Image (cartoon, rainbow, N blue to C red; front, side, top):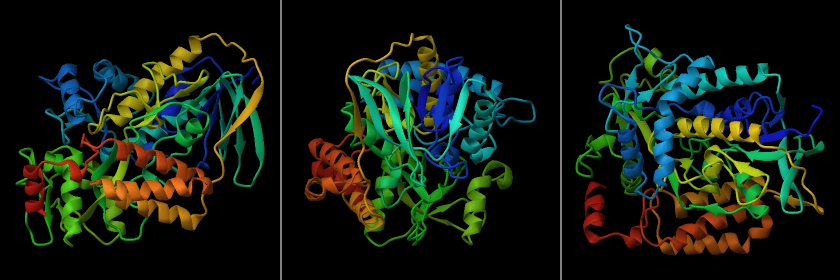
Length: 489
């Protein structure tokens, strides 16, 4: 590359979509992991929400998104995203993604919790994320304007004056590289791996969020963490296989180890209630010593075609989901908070941008609607990449300094912190536990960047004393709500 490139940190769906849309601007795509390790996008099973079916409309999709987000969303962002969904599906098809279709050639549309219509588009059944990543990665690797660098952990941002103008990377072998850039996009994913139980890969630990925070970028809504209600319950495992919500859309039902239905008395939508409600109900049942299972024995069709990822994960652990109930647990799944961005992906620091789960533009509100995450990553990535391609490159001036993320915690302390966050900031929270955990992280903040990030999340959760969306404070609930949830436990 003969000129300073646009640096994109993160090679998931949002990062690759941004890189493709930035053509012909030269792009250097930095991948923290090697090619063999999967980003969270690859693990996405649910699909992409788009109002494409008879009688459906973008307005209905937006209404469901706002309801799921507890109307804490940015309405303009919501209506834009939902209106973009059909065009996003069409763009992905042009990139080589083959979505599932019926015998007549029409898109097969599934339904998930919180959606009033069947509007979930899949590719390869529950292997949607993997299919999208394969197609987009092949496109990016063939694009002349995109260059890749694997094994590149961005540990510091270069600032010239008040403008981000580059990064410093370090490989696993300790090799250091300093790279100047026309702009830096953080597309580093979420923070699920910071919790003891997570559906995310180990790399989704908030490293990019911590990098932006260290530079002084504004953050928002850190307290809003979505817990998927149905991950495969594997005691001692760090990254749990996801049991897609589409199974409940296809008729699977939750019950406890005594055969009692879990959701019947909790919500009129039953097993298709929004994720936060289901996750809290399952979590409360677990606190009483009960195990929760998903019975998918009534789900029809070819599992190898409809749910190949779930089938393979369950069989690997000796469970045939077509005949045996699947043990499930809630797991940290998606972060609605992140680096605060405007409509176009700008953070509060010039030259620094964020997209995908690392960003918070208000579209998800207090609780993301199922299958809106891949949609957001692609749609917002395309918009950001196109905007940066048209933006004139102005060299940053002023004194240069490095903003360091700082050292990380040793393995043992990271494991302890994951347990602390799960207990204090899991699906059900209270002020006493939050305060104690926050004080611990504040006192130990110098030990590593993970402690400082955890302290920020816990502080935000402590400050929000009322429940909202996925942030559930049991010490702020009405007696009627507490009574109904306690009766179900």
